[in-house]
Amino acid sequence: MKKNILPLIASLSLAFISCTLAAQNVKRAATSKPAAFAATVPDLNMIRHNYKYNQYTYTGSERLLVTAGKGNPHPFYVKLDLVGFPDGSDAYLMELDFVSRTSVNIPKDVKMTVMSSSGKIMSSKQMSSETTDKHAFTADDGSKVFWNKAKYLFFAEDMNRMAAGVKHIDVATGWGPDEYVSISFENDELGQALKKELSAIKSVKRPVQEIGDNIAQYADRFGSTTIVSKPIRLEGKRFSFNVSLNYLYYKDTNKEDYDLNFTIKGKRDYDIPVDSPVIFELADGTLMNLKQEKDDRNAVHCYPTVNQVKVLARGVRSLQVETSDGIVKEVFAAGEFSKLLDKQYNSLQTVSPL
Image (cartoon, rainbow, N blue to C red; front, side, top):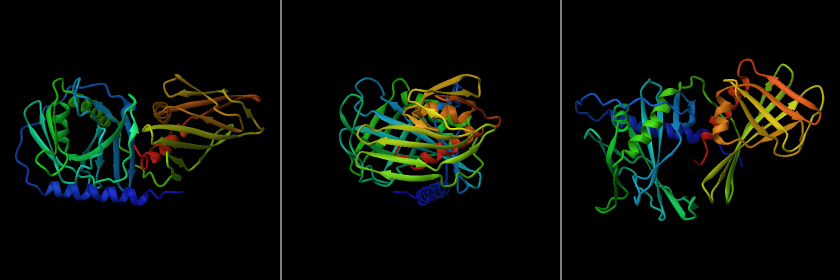
């Protein structure tokens, strides 16, 4: 079935607006200038998505695992989203995904308290609604686990403090006096993760063009979810292409895959056998070597990793496909291929389960 993404994103935007307005109505005590965290080389593959919808911008990181040392009973993943509002203001949304063998719905409005390395105390209310459709999946160690999610809103000054170092967090998981998680970080594990994510987010430009609705199909099945982007036609100098990037999520392992498919139209037909080289010349002059994954005629099917998709979306100079009927090569002078792939990739992120 096709899933309409517009109400989903619109409702998310309204949630951000209400939370931000509520936060702005709270009188904030005067504070000293937050400590600056040490510069780190940003990893652009740390960026999960970067798009604009309905005048809001959403720039998010990938998740990083925080274990807080050997034997910590509360490992969790952390990810950040920088949300830009139409009036030019912005705020960070921090998501914590606690890895547990027990499913727990963390109620809305319970608090998390953070102590920075400088001793500054910060807090935020859990803003995500309870979910009832969580599923257990098999972790890398073979155990069955859940992700118990919680989301918190912070402004830039507090995020900078946390990226400079975090000593301790207390996370309420319910309304009872004993329903909380308390974690100390001897080696600044959370602060280091936030620094990597924040550095990546700050290194990219926010989009100015609206992303629109580019999803052709959303199929949620018993064991997987498949999302298909709308094909985009690209006219090259020698060939024309119809490009589509598809997403697959596996519920039993909590993993994801991507399929990059495109048709080739030229003056003749081209048989492209399985394992035929598909070579992209990147913006920096290096080559990315993929391969044809199944026999087809005038069509290419590749299975890039998520990081390979991100690299392709940042810049492709040329494409070369070795076929049974000769070499197909196209040069993209203005980065046309990368632009359309970036649009499809970010469109998939608007509705991906992860």
